[in-house]
Image 1 (cartoon, rainbow, N blue to C red):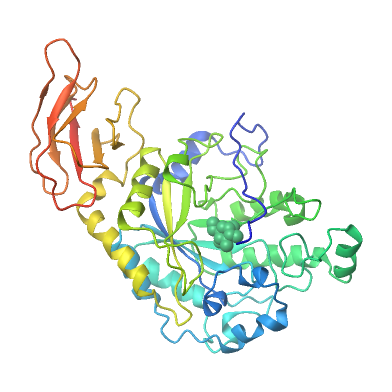
Image 2 (tube, protein in one colour):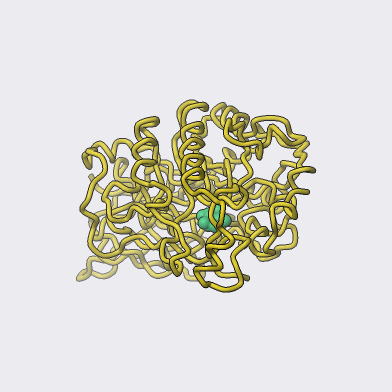
Amino acid sequence: MEKVVRKVLPLQTAHAQKKIGNETHEQKEKRMAWWTHDRFGMFIHWGLYSQAARHEWVKRWERMSNEQYQPYFDTFNPDMFDPKTWAKQAKAAGMKYAVLTTKHHEGFCLFDSKFTDYKSTKTKANRDLVKEFVDAFRAEGIRVGFYYSLIDWHHPDFTVDGVHPLQPKSEADSDYAKINKGRDWNKYKAYLHNQVRELLTNYGKIDILWLDFSYPNSNGHGKGKSDWGSVELLKMIRQLQPGIIVDNRLDLDEYSDGADFATPEQVKPSELQSEYGGMPFETCQTFSGSWGYFRDENSWKSNRELLTLLITAVSKSGNLILNVGPTARGYFDYRAVHALDSIGVWMKYNQQAIYGCTQAPAEYKAPENTLLTYNPVTKKIYLHLMQYDQSTLTLSGYKGKIKYAQFLHDNSEIKYQPVGDNTNDLQIKLPQKPNVEIPVIELTLQP
Ligand code: GLC
């Protein structure tokens, strides 16, 4: 499998100094308060690649020309597309926001853009699918976000680069020049700005914009802020939608307000950090290896692995956005439905340990094989028992700090007692493992 050229690494050293706007730290916190509270969202990758059903990068991986890709457009017919069902499924899983690919790297638009015919209204679907998504999710009380690919492998003016399906065999500048003859980058840049303007004008209040992605250092054949016109673009975005939350893939790391959140992609729970150059994070993850529907992909994460991602993210003050790749007919396949349902079962009983929660204060150490989340408003610590093979649990340094302990899923009391006279430790006697994938003990702190 080809390695993607980048991964836009968030700044991890000094915090950026330059600024584009003049928002204060407090204003930013307020703007992002719902996102920080809600913690859990749904990503939806859906496009013509869903029909190929072998990864959303299929056009690049198989080096397909526009002509070779055209059958997916000609036959695209999502006869079972029903975003109301998607929204209900997201809600039942406990997801509070959803981000849809309005256009992925393949260039196909799920919305009725004035600036192209390469869009859903010109296919058998014959509808603005983005509009229906927005209406359906809003109706369920789920916030809506747009993913929009900065990259476009269909547009005739998007210059061929190191990740393009038509990348020349040699890296010689002259070969790139030859293949790019006649492509007018300024036209593409205008197209990109125009489409972002459309998306942020025609669909009401949009909560998140997820722009993807920059790869400026690719042998001089990459793209970054000056290509996209990122500063201007971000100014326009903030002007059109002052409340919107924007990801960090515009290549604006040098500006302290060039992004709202970092996007560690497909990382292991152990790789998540509490902080990315002063920014909070949202880790984006798939159920299996692919974002777009991949029929023959079998490495699906277990319920435990998915919950571990969610709990770990929150234990480090971050969010999780979990991706579904609907089939080309427009429904979530049985594996995705199963994964969502199982998360929903856990969330039904344990959501208090996720929403409104964040990293626990440093004085509370997580015992081995546990993760802590903390609600600073209700002053509760949630002890997630990631393994359940011992009969006691020692809470080092917790003596005198806990008022009451219970399982979260059923409010059944958990007994604890000090360990000896000369320590600050408490010991919990664990009951039989309850029928919960990852049981959570709720510790109410002394006021
Ligand atoms: C990457 C991939 C893309 C996916 C995205 C989600 O940028 O190119 O296919 O949409 O990450 O984070």
